[in-house]
Image (tube, rainbow, N blue to C red; front, side):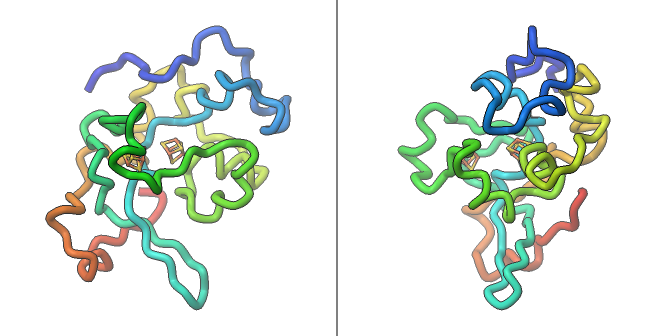
Amino acid sequence: MSKRDPIDRDGLQPRFWERKPLKNLSQKEWEALCDGCGKCCLNKLEDADTGYVALTRVACRLLDDETCRCTQYDIRHQFVPECIVLTPGNLDSHAYWMPQTCAYRLLWEGKTLFDWHPLISGDPGSVHRAGVSVYQMTVSEFETPEDEWEDHIIEEPL
Ligand code: SF4
Ligand code: SF4
């Protein structure tokens, strides 16, 4: 796996996320909060009665589980129109279904980031070594009928 960080985290103030509310972050700071785990690109199952959201190993068709990145990020809405663009303005509506280790959800919940977050470790590979990314762990949504997704539920953190 490449050690190059696909997310630009250069030149940011140390621990900026602890000193500013999420809504005051610059676009670069906001983007840099993403740990690159890829887990938001897994299909989820939501319990209609309890609202509990379970992650499954069944990946969005555009996710590459070697890089843990979207293969068509800039034009993804042509293929997956329902893909969410997460912003400080809509985080309140989406945090509940985000992965429990997602940096945006953690900060929204008032928690701290884990030491394996690339902003703390300085290494984009640390999220994969910590076992909290989708690296080499997904199955295809094309090959996995929806009535079998329950068999692929994963516990968090991975
Ligand atoms: S779950 Fe959160 S931290 Fe992980 S890739 Fe998605 S947005 Fe980034
Ligand atoms: S379209 Fe891309 S960013 Fe959106 S869920 Fe699928 S893989 Fe993730």
